[in-house]
Length: 380
Image (cartoon, rainbow, N blue to C red):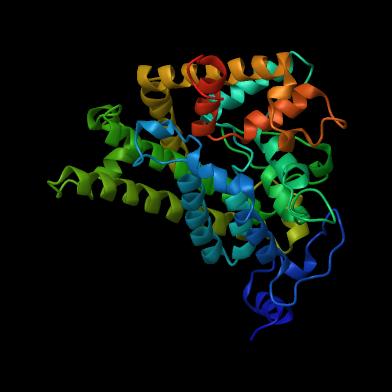
């Protein structure tokens, strides 16, 4: 049986000089004894997996609300795909896979029901009170405060590195800032890997769901340079489903291989020799200029043709109305909120309590709750 110290020695021998070693983590908010068998990041990963917020991701929207079909991706399947892509990149670069895995599994843990539209609706509501809502910041709130699992402290008491990976999760949708994490120019290279893996996962798999749903057509992608490269390897398949899945797989491989090759060159050129050095310079995990440009073109088409498709917009607007209706109902009479969601009512304003409750809902629960409160024939 291997002990934690054994695993830490293996990390010292096998990981790159710029990888975060578990024994060198920057601490937890509340001091704890280290686990005898698991490293700090393995422990963080397990705490995230067993959290309530993680389990709820199964019924939270990626693009399509859950009742549109159970063969579309949700936040949980997206999270697993990010983890798989991120670990592939990390392994090739000699990074700490356990840290990458923990950050990947937690990167969307603060997401609202109904995807980014739910987030926008909550942000508009909280702006009325001089506050805002951003899902990465809320994700940090979830793991620091809202999860109730331990008698000694609120939250999951994760390491600094995992918490930093959550709050500094930066994509075209996300760019939060929190004072506790502004000391360094960049997060760990492991956190940078998750950022890029998320971009790869959501573009390739949203593309897959768009084609599967019929919202996107091959002809709308045919002029894209990256799609031309992909299609050269898939035209031989007459079966549409095989052709589509092969195209998506080819796209992911293309993007992942480019990130690994480009990042290796950047790390060598910048002579990155330590974790601290990596934190003091701009991110080193990136696409080549050519692939970055082609990937941005693909994202633009997804935005114009898929995310702005009337079916997606109608779902999103309905979702926003549900969120706003529920907030107004609870704000008018907070006693409608279950007691377990009000445990912080003496510590924080009522609007924050309602916001936390709404953000934690799944799509399905929010729809059922709306029906209970607004349909006079529904049981409450």
